[in-house]
Length: 250
Image 1: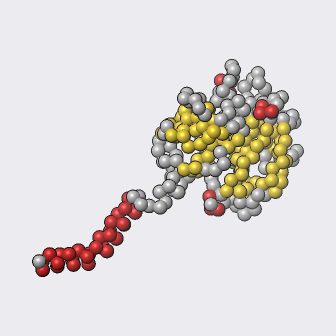
Image 2: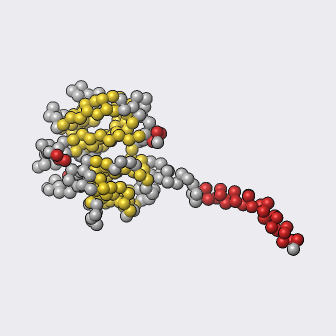
């Protein structure tokens, strides 16, 4: 009987250390780590198509975003697993994918996922609907700057392949984005303040459309160039900015 009491008392004295050791093992292996989700890759879906509405995105066969209407975005970044898996887009309620690619996001990184092109692309294969990804730097921009990412989804004339375009802030631009091919992106930091940008064919004085954008210091902007030359409503040439926070501010 005395031996039994001694064993029980010995276990009680050792219990706190056993519990602590177990907790350390779980934390080290990610079993109870509070940062597991926040350290996952962050993604945000943008729809730069003008004829593919209500798009949803799926990763590893699980929907993570949508439905997103034409020339718009889901409101926030969301986390996904750091897997090498299939990334696909489809219309909400439909079973068939419109496009699918392999995507291997990395932990602690942010990605823009965007659909560009047309469901009904006619004879111009370059205009076909597709999904693409872009890793985005969400660190704080320098001093009084804003970081700007531009995507060219502008289709040009309905009868021809998409043209290369310029996005220029006036006749003597300080922060231009020049010679962007269809589907191409460009990144630079610009001074904070209000600027009027013009969407033009590359090296041309023709102006498709203009937009006044108020860039705020420390913010990041993703600008979609969309539409067709001479189009109306959703098909009209558009310069559409989306603002989001630097990761340091979250």
